[in-house]
Length: 284
Image 1: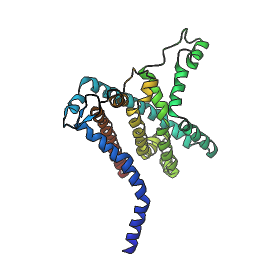
Image 2: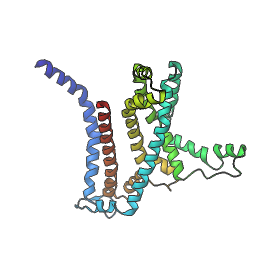
Image 3: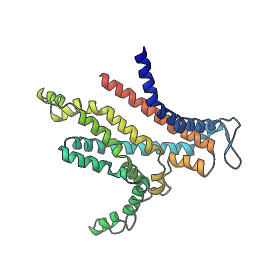
Image 4: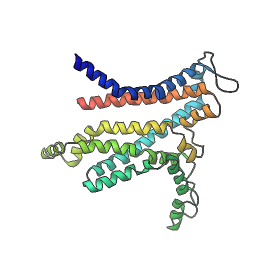
């Protein structure tokens, strides 16, 4: 009995500070923000504590539904592209010799050592009219005049993909690295081709990590407002921009909190779906 109490006390001592910080700095502010959904905007901004459900009906207006739909499409496209690029990249890194594997992983993580804003502004230099990309294309004769590469939805997708691709590569690399090579050897010994081995052994065992990477890419892409502002020029409005504008420009905190609820619901649904698929994959 004393050992059980001692172990529980030890867990409480180690987990306590983290749980307190998480509660005070994340859970409580989120609950306070979400509680404002049921109140009204003041005449000059802020919150008037009079109960209303108008914020929810306003959320279903075509203007806001289109923004949410466009954000889901962009985030989904970024996630699919990240998976198509990140999976073979992670698989290739896992097959490298130890020396080159370390160098490749450093190259993947290197962008995280640079401020996100600086990286996005660097893309504006690359893609602007007199930028390096247009100069290179003009120099080799592929184009006669600079292309309009900035301030469109395609540029936003490229920026988000660049910003979050590493979050797809690292979980998949970790899963491929942990795979028991004897499983693939057994598949080959039983006469399976490399392609059959990949789809029958490697892919199912690494699918949970790929889903984790998909969630890690989709969620920040869905709520991002920096990339649409810098690379989209404010023309590609996403949910993150809408929430920011409601809090900082329109000063409509109740409606901003209502839109934020959409992000929370999407995140929870994705996490639950990832957990269910991972559980079924492990039990299969």
